[in-house]
Length: 157
Figure 1: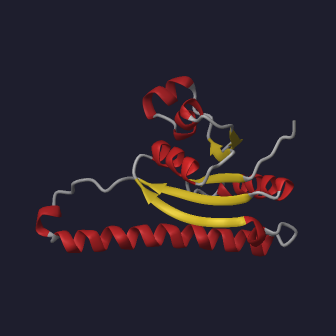
Figure 2: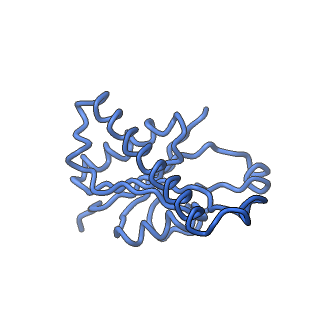
Figure 3: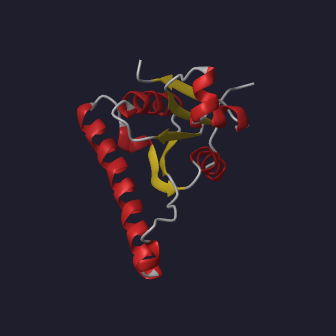
């Protein structure tokens, strides 16, 4: 029986430690000659006190601009990483880059299914159990609900 990884989902929170996590995702993709999909998820827009004074079209425009900015930032960071790490052939393994809005753990799991990911690679700050109960943890939720392996890369330590 052979073990294959054909598709990898890298989930980024766009923090300064994200490149360390991306390095693991790229290395894994190169090792297995897998397609690498990158995603970042922003919080859903909430009702703002002044939202009633802005037209629906303008709100949609603002949301779209934010979405495009998040995706552009993720693409820029990937480009900077690729330039700084010419030994890693990022462009040959990168299949898609997208920014989404919503509940981060749910959206990550949805994208993983969509791209037929064999593994999810993401960072984990390693909150204490109490911290996870109070704050929640996207990494913890993804790990608990995923039906595929999740590689957690420790960050902020």
